[in-house]
Image 1 (cartoon, rainbow, N blue to C red):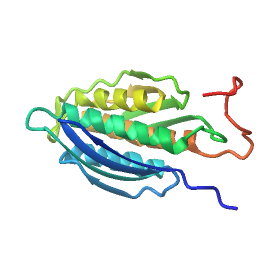
Image 2 (image 1 turned 180 degrees about the vertical axis):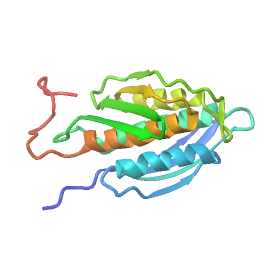
Image 3 (image 1 turned 180 degrees about the horizontal axis):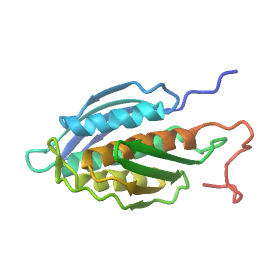
Image 4 (image 1 turned 90 degrees about the vertical axis):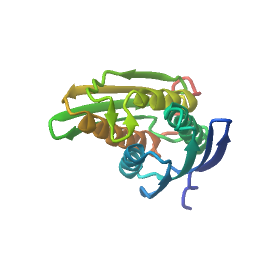
Length: 198
């Protein structure tokens, strides 16, 4: 019997943002994204494509004030959907990692679907903007994602200087690490923890 597809959908509406999101962890990398932030959409597309997750996202926010609210709330919504999709985490690999080269840049991502949120990143982004995207908001997105999904996430810049290459490598590596961590392993019986809970 085929395993049940792991999917989640949600809506988030505040005075600052409106978000509709659906996620299929067992997808093939299809995306339908509309956020009004082209560079950020491109990064989400890379993450989904390399993670083989299907992601549909419609998001609007008060970007005339700042992009902060929208980017952070997308991170919160994506994390909530991921947490809902993997549910009790039975039978998954739990850990994931990837090292991605992008020309002169090399970025390593390691993560644990531990239920304990933690973010470490040493990315050194020289450009303040990539397209119209404020690069300072990358950490806000990642922090919201790990907090709402309960992920321990380390992003380590091993080499590089071009900000676009570094961010692109990080999103590709994040997708591949999530794909590995969410993969079902037939040898894993129950929860992948010696404590019996995540």
